[in-house]
Image (cartoon, helix red, strand yellow):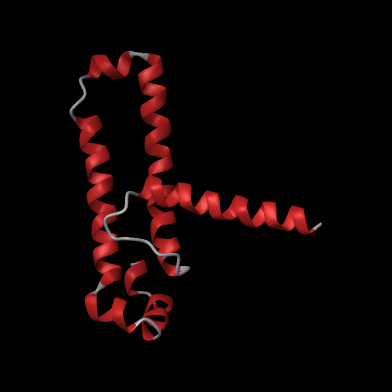
Length: 111
């Protein structure tokens, strides 16, 4: 379990607020709740809905991205990029990408 890893334990030694308030557990729970919401959305669909190739392709793409986005939210917290427990992982992913492009643009400008 990533939350109980030695790396997170070392990290929490330098983040007393997060350790005291169990932010790592709250963050993982918020990720799990969000993932469950996505899965429920597709569980409610009928088999006829999935028979449409475009809808099936869209659902497959979204579900394949789900794990990466969920991991992004946790790794952003590990990297100390202010991640709110209730912040959707899609927003966290977009922020991460935005920060990466800003750093890249700065490097290009500096030559």
